[in-house]
Structures are given as C-alpha cells and as structure tokens.
Image (cartoon, rainbow, N blue to C red):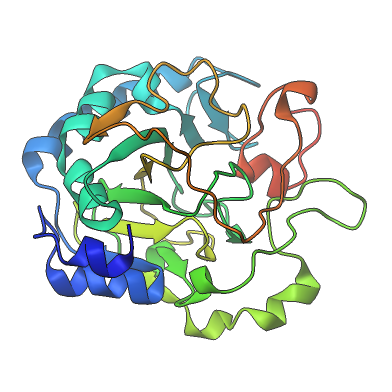
Length: 299
C-alpha cells in the first residue's frame, strides 16, 4: 500500500499527525502511549530476568552481557528474543498497543518479525553507533519497522534513541569494515553524509513509544546518568514483505500474522539491500553491541 492509502484508513491508535510525521521523517515518538496495565507486568517479568542473569557468566542464548556484568551488579545489554522467553512479552507484542501502531503505519495486513530488550544501564551503558536495521535482516521490501517502549521515564541525559530525519529515503550504507568484517555501524568516512546534527532524540515518560523505519539511521550515546534505560523493541512488517535470510528461522513467533490477510505475492522493492554475513556459519548471530565493540570470543 502507498503512504496515502494507509493514511486514508482511520487510525486505530496514533494521532494522524504522528502517522504523517512517521512517513515524512522515518520515525516518530509518542509520549506515554502505553499504560500501567501493560508496563507493570512488563517491568515485573523484566526484573525476573535481571535476577536470573546474576547466575550467568559468559555467553548465554538469553542474555548479551556487558563485560563487567557480575552477580552483585548485573548489567545486561540485551535480553534476546524476549517474546520467545516469556508469555507476558508475547502477549504485549501480539495483543497490545504495538499492534495498533503497526497497523496504523503498515496497513491492515501485518506480521511479527522479532523482538529484543535493550537495557542501557546507568553510569556507562554502551553507545549504539549510527546504523540502519534492514542490513541486519533484509526483506523483499522496506515496509518493515521497529516499535519500542520505554519501561521507565527517559530524560535527555539518559541517552535516548536518536534518529536522523529523512534518512529512510536516503541510501543504505555499508556496515562492513575495510577488513571485510561486519561491524554493524556506518563507516567513519560516511558519517559526514548523514547530518547527525539534525537527529531527533526521543525522550519521554514511562510508556513512551518510539517507531523507526527499517532504513532510518539511528543510534544512541552512552548512558552517563545513574539510571537505567530499558527499551523493549519489536519489529513488524507488512504481510507482503518477506525476510530473505535465516536470522529468525526456528523462532516460533517470527512471521506470525497478527492482523489481516496473508500475502499471496511477495512485493519486491527495486532498491538493493546489503546482505549481512551468514550467521549460521559464524557460530550464530552476535548482538550489535558485540559487533560494534569488536568483542572477540563472545560468540
């Protein structure tokens, strides 16, 4: 569907100006869109995983841990595929307000792709360098987006996610280093092309929702505050956008149709997309943190 066709359909949840801003800028933030009826259970189950992580050291399929993580001071960078780990996350991703947001921006026929929960701990939670998502998990077209919700309030000093407006209509960048290794971030020499000074940083109350298109350039600074910044992220696609790598193969929730009709035809965007490494031949997928920090021996 075209943007105009989607906008002509009455919105399920988003204000019309938020929908228009998303198509214009490639991202949008809406303050306090998710209520405590969802945030309370999400916080509770997230705390359960934090407690579990105290007993984990090194590589674990559930957790990507900061190098200085310990039982006394747990520091999870990412909870991997939370919808596969607990029913509360999946119920939220498949029945909660995210689904209305996805329909408001993708049209009536939508699928779930994957999820993650990035923590960004206080006093040094790691930078996420400028990057685009779709090179990590290419699809046949670019009607793919990621919706996030801040579980706690996020202020400007807590390294909120920043997105460069209009970058979703620009080029896709090479996320390989000159040595041929995947870095997961835009090369230094390309940064002058991206107008980082124009980035919009999405802060807000607990329950604030962030949405960014799969081509939009985004990132975040280190969190130097004394508070953590947990951000639950779920990716959704239009029904006629099909993944062309095996990244989520075997995941029980990936490609689940949430609303509308299944697509009988795949729609192909003529703009090319960089292909990532074959993760299955590299010991499995490593998180963006491991790649960007060039961590050896962690996956």
